[in-house]
Image (cartoon, rainbow, N blue to C red; front, side):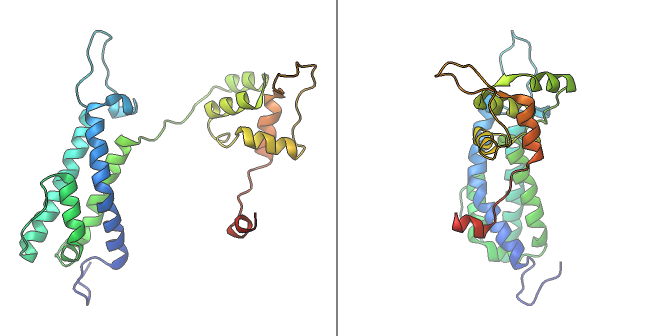
Length: 230
């Protein structure tokens, strides 16, 4: 990217995005510090799983979280140093990751006027995403055998039981909640199974019918005008 007439190496849209990222970093740094010493909050997926025998004690820190924190700190240090060198500034912030991010945020225009600054957004976004993948790791997709699905379809469950089962089935049943089941019933798409049941028993439904009707009648997303009039 070439320097524009305003002597900025970062355009306004990217500058706003960079400011947003820098303001998120103090919270990310704090969450990474927690993740380093509290492994139970992390996913057991992939690189974050700490394989050990029952007789072994867990490590006192999580290496992936520590590595992400170090990389984030190193990237911020490199940009602070470049700004200070090219713009003849003296660093006045704290030496912590949060302090570095706050200093860059306060000196955002100086950063934008620094040659090579067009790479800042990409580098800082990369380390922020790495941190988020550790703090809030994506859930592994649910994989079920077809026989398990067929067995589940034959059950008779109340609305709460079906909603709990839907969570285990994953997509495309993620939105099959108790409220959704009531909506399908109110629309005449499903009906509870005939009793006789005790008066205080919840109504039961054929799971297969509820699953089929949920797929056959997708959830309608309301537009803004509908929300305002609702």
